[in-house]
Amino acid sequence: MKVLVIEDNDILRDNIVTYLDIKWYKAKWHADYHWAMLEVVNYKPDVIILDLGLGSEEWDGRDICRALREKWDSTPILILTARSLTEQKIEGLNIGADDYMVKPFDYNELIARLEALVRRSMGQKWQIVRVWDIIIDTSSHQVKLSESEVRLSKLEYELFLYMARNIGRALTKQELLEKVWGEYDAFEESRTVDIHIGYLRKKIGAEIIETMRWVGYIIPDTYRHE
Image 1: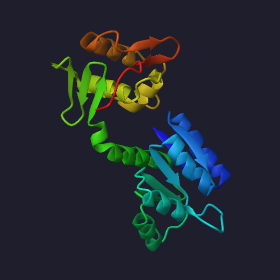
Image 2: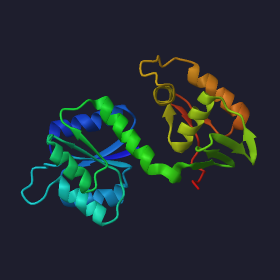
Image 3: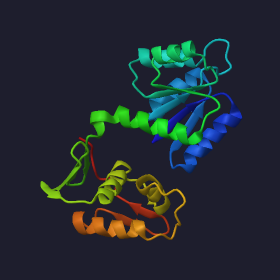
């Protein structure tokens, strides 16, 4: 998940970017209207964290939100602000924001809200995922290899789907334990991931998932989404 943080408070912004990095998300930031708008086009974030204040007398976060929606940009926007009045929240949502959080906030809740926004925005785009000659239908949870159904356990399915959606990116065991099993305090030497990778390789083909020594696992970037 790629996140664009538009926030002028240096300490808060750096804390958010650092936390996103810890959680394995890519993040860029800007506090300037024009640079932020360019970054949306060039970086193509999956979701935007937007402060309303931004410390400018000429424009604020509301102007950025309005401008993006006027350009028919549908990137999910989460407003993160100290403005807590009900009418301010309503205004933020009415100008095109998808969610609204008030400072101070809980970082785990922030991550959960970002992930929910991205899941919602993907919709049909993520319904069918292709990996080589394998098709994952996320609406029915079916996996087909050359038109033949592959029976996966729930954990095998979740593991394969997460890897497929991060195709071409090296995934550490720790990340997989966190994102698939929800084990945030698991020991790095845990064999859980290795065992389930072995199960998957037997069912979908050993060549699909490559081992990256000292790093983890990767599905090579030879795929397309439908």
